[in-house]
Image (cartoon, rainbow, N blue to C red):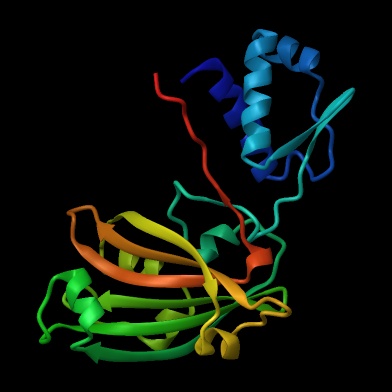
Length: 237
C-alpha cells in the first residue's frame, strides 16, 4: 500500500466510525506531515482523494472539514452492499416495505438474460424503502429458483443477502451495473414520493456467485436528489 493510501484509509476510517464528526476540521497539512512522518505531497494526495470521494472539503486558507455523509447521497460503484449494511452506522431511519412477492415464468427478458427456457421460474420481489419517512427508493429483483428455492415475506422484508449468505451458504461475488436516467413509470409514480421530479435514476444489475452463476437480476430506482454515485478513476500508464 502506498503512503498516501495509508493516510487516506486511516482518515476515512475515523470519519466512518464517527471519530471525526461532520463539520469538524482536520489537522493542518503540516500537523498531518508531523503525525505520519510523510511528505507534503503525500498528505496532499491523500486529502485530494478524500475530497474526491466526498469525505472532506478543502477550504482555502483553512483546514479541511469533514462533510456530512447522507445515507443515500453517496454509494461507491465499486462496492456491493445491502441497504442494511449501508445503514449500519447511520442515524437515518430506514424502513423496507415488501410490495409484492410472487413467482414468474416464461418472461422473455428473463429467459434471455439467464439463457434459460420457459420451464425455469423466478421469484419477483418488489420492495419500497423509506428514508426518514420519504419513499425514495423502489427495487424490483428476480431470483433464479434453481439457486434460491425459497424466499418468505419475512426474509424479503429484512435482508435477502444475509439470508442467502448465512442460511443458504451462497457466496455472492460481484455485480454488473448499468445506470440510466429516465422518466418514472406508472409503478414508480404510484409507489415513490417523487415530489416535483418526473424522472428517476435507475440502476439495473446482474449479480453473480463466486462460482460464476448468475442468480439475480433487477433494478433499483432512486429519486434524483437522493443519490450520488462515487467512483475513483486511475490514469493509465
